[in-house]
Every structure is written in C-alpha cells, then in structure tokens.
Length: 293
Image (cartoon, rainbow, N blue to C red; front, side):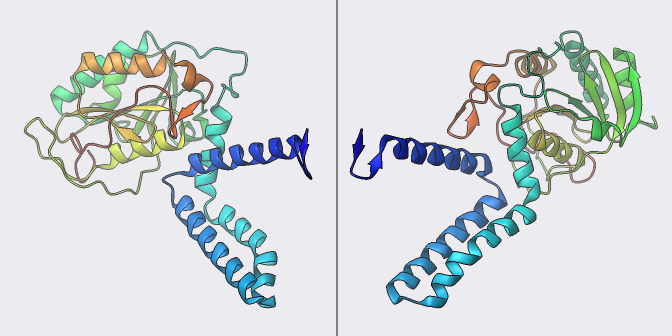
C-alpha cells in the first residue's frame, strides 16, 4: 500500500536507517567523537541552510563534496572510540563465543576475594583482571606469561611487596593465571577528590585505578583493585568504579558480573544507552592515591 510516491518499503528503509543511526549515536555517547560529530552536524546544517537561502554555489558545492571527506577524517582521528563501539556490537549476542558458553569462575572468585582481603589488610596494592568475552591476549603478551593453575598462595605471592611481578596487573581466566606484571593502558580522565564515607579523604585516582577503568572501558573485562595507600578494595566494570567493599560483597559482586549475565546484557539489549542489569557506581576516589594506588 502506497501513499503517493512514498511506499511502505520506503518507510521501512527510513526506519531501519534511523534505528542504525540512533544505535551508533548511543554507542558513541559520552565520547569525544560524539561531541565532534554533534558540532559537525550543526555546522553542516547551518551551511546548508545558508547556501539554500542565499542560493550560494560555493556553499552548496562545499556541502555536496566535503561531507564524505569530513566523515573519513572523523573515523581516522577518533579510531579508538569507534573501535570500542564496534567491540560492543561484536559482543552483542556473544559473537566471539557463538554456540559456546563462558566457563565459570566459581573456584577463582572466592580465591580472589580472599587474596584481595589479605592484600587490603597489609595495604599491599593489587590489580586483578578477569577476562570475559573479549580476548585479552594482546595485553598478556606485554606481561610475564605464567599459564599456571590459580591458587591463593600464587596470587598472594604475585602482589606481595618485593615480588618482581607485583607491578602491573594479573590476568585471569576461569582455570588459569594467564600472566602477571601486565602493563595496562591508563585512563586519562581526571576525577575530583571527594569524601569516601568511611573517614578517608580520597585523592585523585592512582595508576592501578586508572588502569582498571581503562581496561573495563575498552573491553568487557572485570577488574578488582586493592589500594596500596588505603587498603580499599574496589571493582571496575564498564568504565565505572565501585566504592570500597568488604570481601563478602566483593565475592557476591564478582559472581553477579561473571556468572549471572542477564537476558538484556546477553543479547546486547540496551536501555537508555546501558546494558540492562546492575552496574557499579560512578568512580569513587576511595582507595585511590596520587601515585601508584
């Protein structure tokens, strides 16, 4: 059924394009690329209106010929933001592990919680990274390969002061300590100092906390950070950092993130730009420090 020259097929095409465009904008929301794209759209619309009203040949030529070049420039300049967006699309529906299930972390979760608690008591810093759907092999190659069976003593010895492996992160898979002394990229965002609610004054986030935010922002990994300055234990997921938590809460939160993937998160369904399900609170400076946290 058609209305003049506009058919239902045209309506479906317009709807499909609008949905794809909207989804792309949601994936890029909050990034620098999004701000640039917004500015570009405003400039192009303004130039187009001026060109049409003034019947300017030059302005109309610029709009017709420069838009494709501008889009290519944006893709090149903001490659990291678009790469993360495509990674989110690739993880939707479990593309990487199509037809297979993620192995459980059941034995490793209480082990990591115990070690984090011991490190916290001694104020020995630590950074645990749990691999999920997105492979972290490129990060493992930058560290010291272990390929060892996880044990409490092994994990504790890695982060003990004086150990040659205590700097950097330990990369974990369900039944393997993949690598230690893994150097991760650090988030460049600046988070203001704020009270932690437990009598401590948080400074700017330290290196470990920034690394945890960065790896969980770029991939779907989960990170646990123990502050070397305060002994606070925090969990990072989706580029967000939790407030300090007790070992029991850490164990429960890790189980929820690593095992209980909800229907919406499993299939990449997003509500208001976030996967359905509970997420950690916004970055807290509890447990952070200005140097190595």
